[in-house]
Image 1 (cartoon, helix red, strand yellow):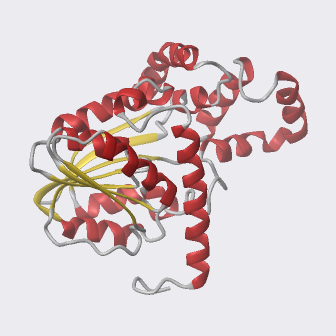
Image 2 (cartoon, rainbow, N blue to C red; image 1 turned 90 degrees about the vertical axis):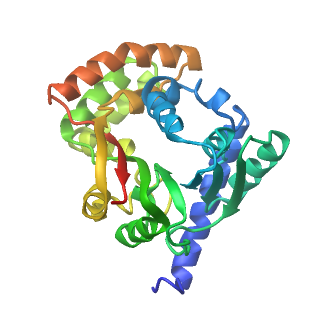
Length: 296
């Protein structure tokens, strides 16, 4: 398939991807507003990634031009626009974009925000236009990681910044730790089913845990970009200024707890120091990376 004319098989897959993430956005919107004031209280951002988002927001300046790739239902694009930036949020999920637009229209920011449905795999980008490009949980979904990063590089102004959060592959040790914790803690699977699955899968249990952590099969393009080594491609194209590897097991565990948000957040905050210590001591590898890179 060419960059200009993706074939019919690709179009069918991207339509399915759009439908899945549109449904996910609707489910999320049923519980939370597409607003950082709400999202920072969810278990994931309250425990794992909230600090990274706050540091990103501290970088955003008035009148900057910002592109968010994979904006979902728009909360981060809106929050950056509240800092006075002019923000474009793009996503393949049409319903997510509709939700983002509706909320932004009723909560206009100090800067400006514009949402549109677009597939970054084939979306042309203006040259030397953006001060900042943000991609959170996006690169491992891309059909052509290197080609997209090359266009992002060209779309950034000289000295422009790229902010990325994305997952890494799951080592066996992480899968064992996460599986053991979820076996002990109240999870979305009953204790009876936990025992049944353990007896049934036996030798396959670690591989199944890895597949669950990496959300394999969640959507047509889930994990598609992993073998393309996004982090290596960024290193080749950009000057990396900050890189942090983190989140050995906590994010996955709290995402799967059968608990109210406050309790899942409390458990996550109790687990996090042990997670951080294990990563710092290199006893476990982090499952996520956060980086800030610059177009030289």
